[in-house]
Image 1 (tube, rainbow, N blue to C red):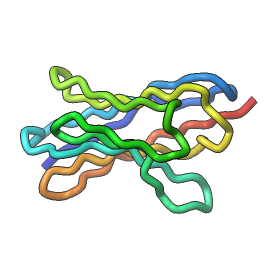
Image 2 (cartoon, helix red, strand yellow):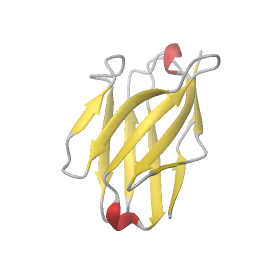
Image 3 (tube, rainbow, N blue to C red):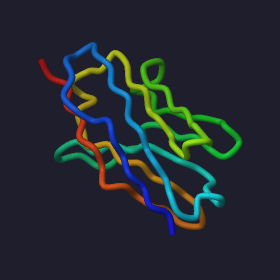
Image 4 (cartoon, one colour):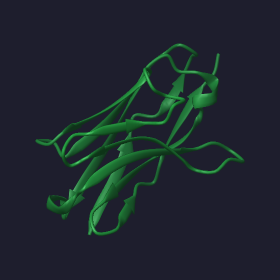
Amino acid sequence: QVQVVESGGGLVQPGGSLRLSCAASGSISSIAAVRWYRQAPGKQRELVAGIIIGGSTNYADSVKGRFTISRDNAKNTVSLQMNSLKPEDTAVYYCNVFTFRAYWGQGTQVTVSS
């Protein structure tokens, strides 16, 4: 079992920055990948960024150049640095941790508005 907790969401003005954190605990030695997804009202959940055990990363085209995913192995956390935020980035952001199955956090709200 893996427990996943996200933090760092909030309200920010367009052009601002936020840093989300995903903390994993439990059977973390078998984690193969960690991904961030988001879901806006009335829309399907979409992949934002991911990082695999070897360190490779991938990003949705809509966030390339603005978002950066990184990991801190010592703290068992994966962060998502979000810069140059736009109103269309408003969504609930979820962390997904994959071992032999997927584990989801409860989500954290990000609102980009003036």
